[in-house]
Image (cartoon, rainbow over all chains, first blue to last red; front, side):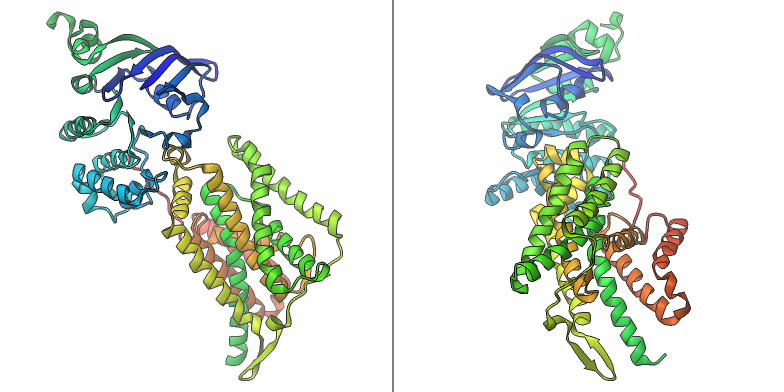
Length: 239
Length: 297
């Protein structure tokens, strides 16, 4: 569905991505794990057209994404839950959800999706008239995910959705990601919480300083000694 | 001072304040989406009065056709200024855009001098608006009543547009976070252009009424009202539309009352706005309705 080939991205001469290739299959959960500065967010931002690459190609179902402007991607049903949530603080919860459906004209279907989002996140319905900035961190994260779902995405990219959330909420978010995927949305997930991410992922890529160093099914990577040592906080000898 | 006289001053203050409010909204809206003071705004306001002059005097188009035409032309001018002076350098450092804004302002002023001459021209106000009516013992121009009414109607329409429509929601989203707005599918170029168009439209509403109230137009007439309305926007809390309106009325009424109660200070009339600006910057730099947004991490 999404295919990235030899992508090189540089910020002022410093290469953040040194030629990565990866593929996201339709209907799957794919995860990119890696430490800070590995280039995970840059990858997503480049797919969204927010960063211009030096070279490489990105295809979404045979369509060249690098030729598309950011605001056209919502129409192609590609969306991003940005790092740090980035909800609109002075819009109400309802308006934030509505703006997720900005490109859509099918009012009836939008209402259906609104019900769907509320069924995933009942708290958002209770707070629909509140300004989004008054929500707690966890609620804001749910709103960011709900807002992305309102575009009825085929490809949903998420940048660290669990960051800064209490352990119980992290579990809840991952449960919901799985549920969203079960309903047919392809997911490209970035996480530092490698353990949780790999557990729900069909396929994972491990990134290190702008390169993909390992790839495999979620299960394989979870069992991999190097991954364990580097990201799961387990020493090699404990295996 | 008799009550009659006081009421006359008050009505003058309210109508002047209305005009300031209409222009101040343009500053505050553009600041809201771009964090930019559009210094050309006062000159866009000036151009509106020239458009009206040419429509009615030169082309002899009836006022009820000319005025709507002026609104549209001025909105287009505002959008042109954005496309030419601001859009190409939107990613540049703020100071470059600020300099470009000042350049755009000088350009419009001098273009007007070159094209239309520096000699003041009489504004062709329809007598329908400038007729004087007797209220009790005081004589007041009909215009003095029309101005606040038109202002309130424009404001209500603006608030509806910004708070209740999809376009307005996009404007508010762009003002908070351009990048995320783009991810949501909002074309921020269109939204920003629309914001300039809307601000210039309101400046034209103000400009037409200004021309009828002070019926002499010249190329530099936008400078002082422009500065004052910028100050009005700062006093109210820049970025906040309600604040711009409040700031406009404070300035307008304050200025008229200053002259009314302290005739000795008439020469300092224009200084009033600047003194008020200094006071507000010292006591509440974010303005009356301005607030610092606390970010949740």
